[in-house]
Image (cartoon, rainbow, N blue to C red; front, side, top):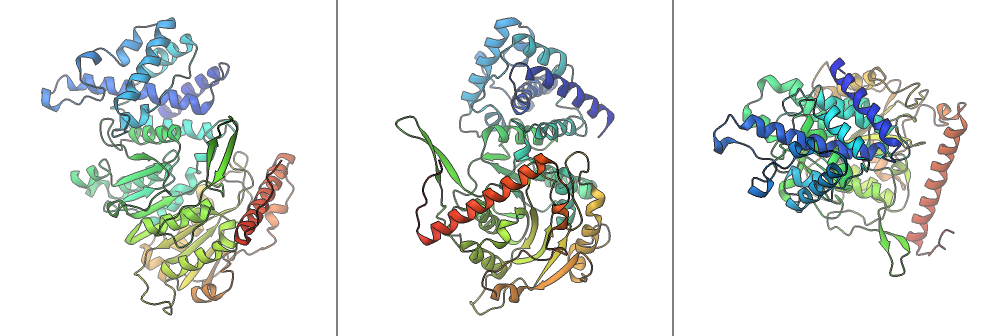
Length: 521
């Protein structure tokens, strides 16, 4: 990160620490920061447009008489309770301007609320921090990287941070290098969180192809050739702001982040992607919260009945596997991070794995070590698969001819701070498996050879097994690294994850058998 970006991060994060005393969490702080930065960017765009002809000026905020003088300039002139009241009203009014969220403005301010109850702190944030920076015309390497660094720091806040939506940047960039996005791709992430995969894919395209890209090719990504879906509105705001500060999309244009349940309906014909990158939430159950007539709150497990799904299940992970597979265009490719249970869970899980191997080319799997995610105790993998032609008959061999498995787990143990995952840890995988920096992706896959951490398995043999168990390829199946001495918090998290996993598997078994389990007390 550049020195100026680091300076900005330190300034803004230090102020976040001040706001904690007012009960503002780091995630709420990032949300308020997004509102105010957007307003400052809108003011900068208005100022820059004054030198242009009237029909070329861009108005981010409503261009009506009643909105004259509203926005950033009015906040600068107010103090005390008047500032708090006007800011609160401004958020409310902006939220009503585009309740359909048809613009980026509508997405960012939809149901926006003021969380800063101390007017003195609000004024300091406006006048001393944000107003002193140039956000619209500044380099994305400074403002964009600074904003993403703030999200990364928020992820470390275990109480109310962005950890559950944050995938390590090192892992994201490695996956993107292996997938090699191009200017011709349409790219999506159906569980985009704060937008990390979308940013990395766009950055890769600009770095590798920027000099040769036409204006039309560059504009594609502002107009919807890259997009994400996020269920949580507050997180979608962060993703939208993250993209804007990296010069992707337009404040007054169509939003590139869609706030909806990605699993609720099948992809529209025009909204399929040639490249899908995703790290779906690690929770296994798809559920909704219901407030009953008597005021009690309960959760109801959801099954998605979609004609394009191979199996109906309440397991969110398997639903995402099916959804991502159906998102792909005819020549599409996908890379998705999934926890270990997806590899071996029985019942409908075995059927879904079998269909994936038969219908798609699941050519590669990366077994990830523990300790790299903010969700404690998670053991995960990256599945790489490509679309394939429809199978003509059930007797036709599976499209997965060979499944190559690279074991990064055995002998490796990482932590988020003391021993984090670094780019060097993934270099061998990138070069041997995908030929990163040496040859094209197709040539690299064709010349693979099994040795050391890289093993190969026959696709037809995997399909023919009863359980279609893909928990394979580990050099040390006893997981020696996981048995090394751990701190008490690490042991507690690991035990909790194992117990929750066992309980979830029992619930799925009961569902398959038609047994109704008693409610947990």
